[in-house]
Image (cartoon, helix red, strand yellow):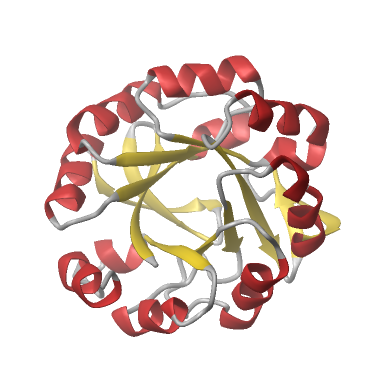
Length: 239
């Protein structure tokens, strides 16, 4: 399992939200490229980036910050937020992004999402954000009746690069990941799974690494709050 540090972008800044609520924003840096470089220096092989504004507006917003992250980091970058078309995916790849992550459109326009995955084999992942097991879209502002596992299984046929599974109740709360739901997802689909939401310590990462088939785990706030030393965590987990 790889440890994937996260950079969430809002108005060009590195921020964290609690449960995806924009009224509860903490800004950690005004220099995303500097943050990305620090993650690289700590040994990160991949960085998870979210264009929070793009996820709400349905188009790329923080493009200059994303380009600066890709240029400075020199490692794989996976990006979610505002990618809704083949042209959008091509645009983010042109910025230097390694993997594009489709979110809202996986639910709202699955046929187009599948076409994007087919058009860029091995380069497009799907992001499934769940609140109490139900999929949420539009920057987590709308909760659907679809279960996270059923949605993931529907995409097995097109072989996305991976699934980023986020438990909204845990995201940004430092309460520990939802181990049971993450295990259910990882064991329930034939797609690599990356866990997101709630990681509060290196011990949480170690626990997640014990889930068979789990490809990676994303951590954000715990890094910014000094609860996880990224270099030490990578040394313990990625052996």
